[in-house]
Image (cartoon, rainbow, N blue to C red; front, side, top):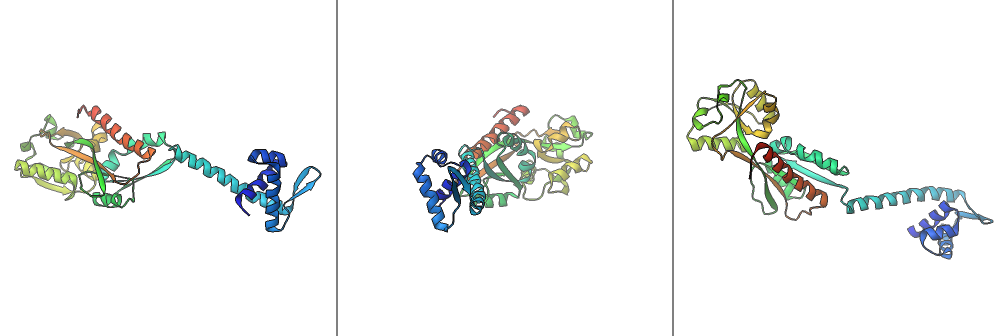
Length: 304
């Protein structure tokens, strides 16, 4: 048996007429008759009886028809799915991100994208930058987002966003009376810092070194959420990307004061494998990343 013979049988049984089946299949009526004969000869059993001009399925024919119906329904679904892929309506985008960008930036990109591409599945996981790089370099994911530049022979790196680094304090902290903060303003303040090696920690350490500051490190915390809570509770001040604390700032639970040094910004980067095929949905997602970044900077009044 071949699939063509099965299709001839299925269409004949479905239409109950040889000539109609031939028209549906764009073949001649003798070809339909021959296809059914060969199918019956292959199994040495009759699937269709003729009673006058009427075609009647035998018991074996009834069983085969049910099976054939399922097969060709699946074939139809397969063709529809492939057409969806060809029209770029389906797919799967796998994203890995460092904590800050994944928690506070990516959701604003994923939500509108998912509305525009409801059949494209998105997987997004938070990992340390080193693991984001490792998985992206081995094509285990489609896109990676990191908070400091990394050179890798297999990866393309693009800067996505520059966000302002600000000092966050409790709303009643004395520093809130200042419009900007100069290095001496941080003297004797209790600092709540990210873990050693993280991008925010590197930024504040460089700022301290460059300005010859002597500071008190009160707490070291790896979680942005925990840092914000500690600052809210008056345990110290912290350096953080504005976007990371935007909700608490707007709600009045935290105050944000920019540093007078314009170089105090945090950059975020997107990486993907040099050989990665950028499907239409994936390219659309990448376009959305840069579109949202531009809108966010306009909201802050920043012009690149």
